[in-house]
Length: 411
Image (cartoon, rainbow, N blue to C red):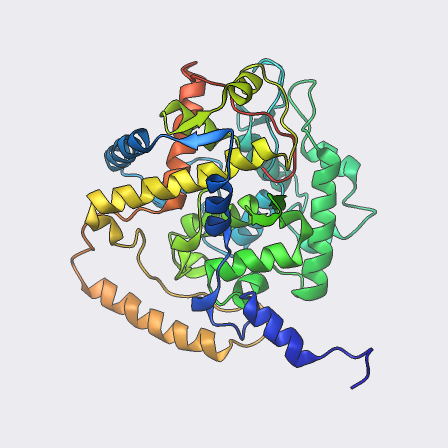
């Protein structure tokens, strides 16, 4: 073999080590997000945890989640989230989380970027979902990877039309969103036959493998930084993409991930705000003053890393405390279902084996009259609950501290 030739065995070994590709053992894949978050927390100077408040919060969160029957079903209940359980919904979720970043505004609520759709005005994350739904209603193939690669059709001007605002403020980082679409389109068409479904198949229905695949294949999902000389992976959007698939499909079909509990919370600016409100997170006087004065915090700075990493670790401690107090939470929060068939090409032996196994499981479930007792809980459901609760508090003007301001594509 010459120096110019690629060693296929070496490439295969590398992909297996990273938890990528159909030949990997999905049980071995690790994202290292939680491990990296603990390292950053252990070395943090300006963000700390209050252990007693964290334990109190765990019980409060658990009781409120039980009261609201919070589960994967909650995701599909929102009027804007897609209701169909098919390939088009997978495409929608990929597009949605590809562009799911930076919606905060310095302007008053009535002047901030907003989307008018279905007789209502939507802001924040929901403005993104509304804009995508509106574009599809207008026959713009905004969720089609091949369309993203057509430079003369999927232009920045077209994207500006898709995200046209009901106010004078435009969507932040429009250029960066256009670049994300272009990059994702090129990667999917070049390496995955133009379909994100093939990324799911390559990950063998492993949540950790799919997160790693996204971070490796798409630079716009590679949410990494350096803290005290060590690489720190946060992977907010890659993880929430997997979580949205899991929640939308209720842990079945395209959303069936056997290791879903390897996904951590999604480190953005809302969850730290909520955790501080609960008394779990404590800030140094300089950092707290900076946040209260609405001053920007640079992406990748120590303050920002500490805020995001400590939030990840805090939610993990909350999850562990809930599990300690309520052993029934060890029941998985979803049931197994029937696997879908591959979009193009024949099924792999792994898929055929699991299709047979899951078909058997589905028949057994139909014959059973009992469901597992107790509601499972993981970092995903805790994150969804904290995010929704923080938005409700903000809507009612009950937030005790503003969210931190960082403008980036990572969240």
